Image (cartoon, rainbow, N blue to C red):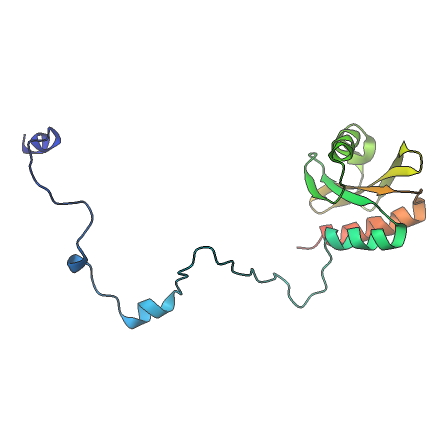
Length: 169
């Protein structure tokens, strides 16, 4: 009954649930120095690179390379589920069109060691080239907005670059 009396408000104890400062055990110097405390919550801490000494490529680097080499207007990397992994295409409608095109085509059925490519003419003097490769993480499709046709040999080179990045562990 005594426990239920406290729940009904008949217990007039005013002790708070938090311990008093005098009740806390003192911290030693080692404990204070072990974990650095960041006083300013808004300070951004740089994240260290996973492979700082390795020359790893990124989709952003492929975008820059294709811009220089083929005058690409932007790229979009899409996985087998239609999720966009990287996009530098400024027109969102082209990205949505790329997703719909990829999911409705044979590009998703690319086998190991192969690459597939198709192209769609968007407007006078602008094409979307789709290059699909099967990586260790499944099929990836690269959509490239260019002013001219890449051709099969150039598409194969680009597919090799995408595989190098996608297969990194």
